[in-house]
Image (tube, rainbow, N blue to C red; front, side, top):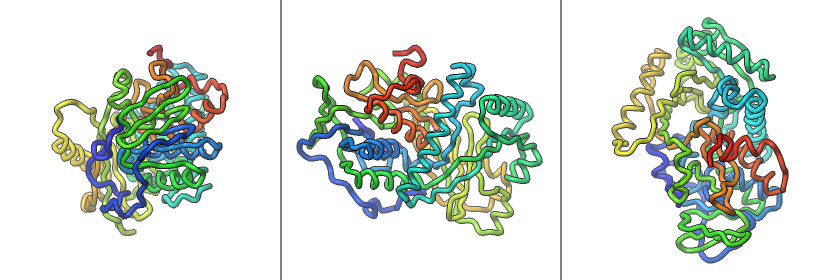
Length: 414
């Protein structure tokens, strides 16, 4: 039922050792087990849910089809943004002022909670808080962006307008204007996942790798989650696989699948960093698909974007080569001093977006005994943190209007 890591990404992410045996391994599931909750998916969302549940004294098992953290999590560039992919103006038009403001508030608080969690457990993941620069390259896009900032400020969100000159002085980007915000962050996503999962294990979570789920059955107030060599009986199964896998085919129409691409340069010396001119901030643009860049702790530039929809019959390697060339070409034209700097590694990841770019978190009437945490778009780690909190609230019987914001029928669907 779950998807092996090799289909979720391609290439060699910067975060992973070339030899998978270098990392600790968890055993496969063998025999019969019981637990309060079983989480399917050992990426960052599954790790965050396991940590939250175990912290609350809920016995939890995590099942991962391949190796933990090596699927979409390892393909992430880990720009931890407070803002959802959809601007506040767009969400306002779709859901109204009160709802859109609350969605944005929850996204902001989810990132703050994630940063606090990583700091509390002292996860060694190169966590750094960084300002975010959201820039426009055309006059028309800058006008739209200025209106977006006005809407944000009216709703109580902070931001600073950068003129074309200020944008260029700060980033060397020849744009038409930008919004600068405080409170973003960045990290090594694989080490963040591994560290959170280690914390969950310390709290009592049991983790099983190389244990793809082959069947889930619902029996009264319980579920049985079966793998090839074992099974778990639990009160609830939480599907944290990022998108609707083949077992949940009726839900597939709710998601659009995309491939995203990331490049990492070789480490760049101080003189070349100064020549490039990009400050130690996270930048992303208003175009769709958007492009983004940030510095790593070892002075590489991480360049990402060029997303493409997943379509049947695509030649994956050909598309990978074309997309990574396009991505590098975009940034070479934007930052000419980058041209002589070598790309050291490149990779691709698979992710799902929904019609409003917001995740689905909670139950679905077709699947009794199941909860879901799916469809994060470009905000996987932030929304993974939010999913952990909202699902724990559901478990504890907390009633909140926040749950309805991310339920499956929020847009009138079933």
